[in-house]
Amino acid sequence: MQNNLFIYNTLSKKKELFIPIHLPFVGIYVCGPTVYSHAHLGHARPAITFDLLFRYLTHLGYKVRYVRNITDVGHLENETLGEGEDRIEKKARQEQIEPMEVVQKYVNTYHKNMDQLNTLSPSIEPRASGHIIEQIELIKVLIKSGYAYESNGSVYFDILKYNQKYQYGKLSGRVLDDLISNTRDIEGRDEKRNPFDFAVWKKASPEHLMRWPSPWSDGFPGWHLECSAMSIKYLGEEFDIHGGGMDLMFPHHECEIAQSTAALGKETVHYWMHNNMITINGQKMARSLGNFITLDQLFTGDHPLLVQAYSPMTIRFFILQAHYRSTIDFSNEALQAAEKGFQKLMKAVESLDKLKPSDNSTIDVIKLKEKCYEALDDDLNSPMLLSHLFEGVRIVNSVIDGTEKIDVPGHESLKALFSTFVFEILGLKDESASIGNEKLTGDLMKIIIDLRQAAKNNKDWPTSDKIRTELKSAGVVLKDLKEGAEWERE
RNA sequence: GGUCGGUUAACCGAGUGGCUAGGUAGCGGUCUGCAAAACCGUUUACGGCGGUUCGAAUCCGCCACCGACCUCCA
Picture 1 (spheres, rainbow, N blue to C red):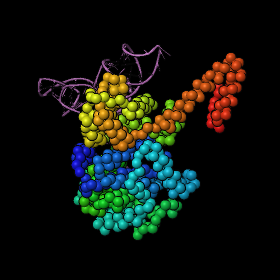
Picture 2 (cartoon, rainbow, N blue to C red; picture 1 turned 180 degrees about the vertical axis):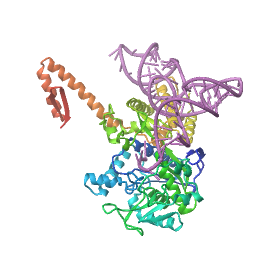
Picture 3 (spheres, chains in turn green, yellow; picture 1 turned 30 degrees about the vertical axis):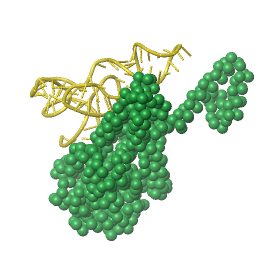
Picture 4 (cartoon, rainbow, N blue to C red; picture 1 turned 90 degrees about the vertical axis):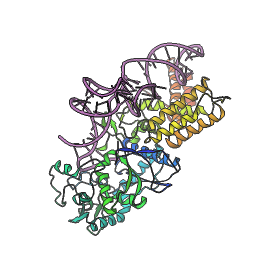
């Protein structure tokens, strides 16, 4: 199996030809969500980016194992002070439910949202809380090899020790000495030998709910550890691709590299891929900044910043229109443009079946197909791919117009091209059947209501009442309010 | 302050040392009873100042502005 896929490797800061370790298999690990709140637009970015990668590698014929974790323990709100509250526990306390109820609730909504965005399920979706034993075993290895030490029931990773043999910070381009010299002194971490040491195991305070027994204390694993433990378990000591958001590069992925390298004595990940952020008014969208829009809000339009609802495919198209390593700035204008562009694409796909082939052709579909592959091979350049697909849209419409001609083989190739790139690889789908009908119904009702209002203005009560009666028998109830009529299904 | 990235036309957003990215919006045209759609054409593009080059928006330097990360974040 051969390919010309080049992937930008954060580790080397270069595009590199993708060569898998064990043909025909490919292993991908992507950092998934911490499930303590609704998924927001930012979560859609890595999900769609790596869904595209998963789909493309699968299309190329690889047997891909795609692992995306669920963080359900150990992710604290403020690790600097050492006493940060676990996000999930905090939510549980606020809502007076079990932490695992919080986890279940938001895993469910996350899955629902990901389905709506038409992302394929990962091959394995491991949870941190389900791999406590694996994490404890990894800690034992780290302690034994001298890269971690126990302190008052907690266990910390020894950064200085690690840095003697390996290079801490190489992924994010950081130098440990610089980090140390730039650090303000913060109180409350006397348990650590060095302020940069990070917890791999934390002793639980008496009131802490999520706790497991370990050789060191009743406690819980450090946030970074789960990814090392679970990626090694499911993908092996060396695997192909590790992905995640750019904001995770430091410290999360840096710590992950340190843990895995210290435990195994070798590089675990061959290609590191990082998607960029979504910004809103030029600033990163994040829960902590309070400027985030959840996916549910986006799909319903229920948010002060939204002038209308945007369908899941509009969001997917919007995200694919930018390259995954660029930031995308959110705005209603941009989303409306994406919506129209997406509809134009879908409309052309519908028209494709109706094309009347000629004996000869003015179109080079093979060339177009090559360009589509070239775009994807160039570090998943989805915007470039879309621009080529819009060339296909122009072709379809021009054939209908009669300004271009296509023969039977060309027609078949073009159909295959759209099917492959639009649906199979980009993972778009036609949602006009559902959403379009809903919109149509609304528009039809408006017309009917306006006609009835005209009748009422003319005091044409028989007509007005007839409309209301017949709608009622069709299952639609009209309500005459002060501001005008409203309708709803019975 | 440190590290890294960005600044492209009305908006979003690719890309390249010389050749139209694309979408949306606008304008003109074809078509059309009118409109819509579609097609064709089109609008002040590449932050500023220097340098390298036959030629730079693309490479180099400086400056300005914006953003990300620097133990919360997808």
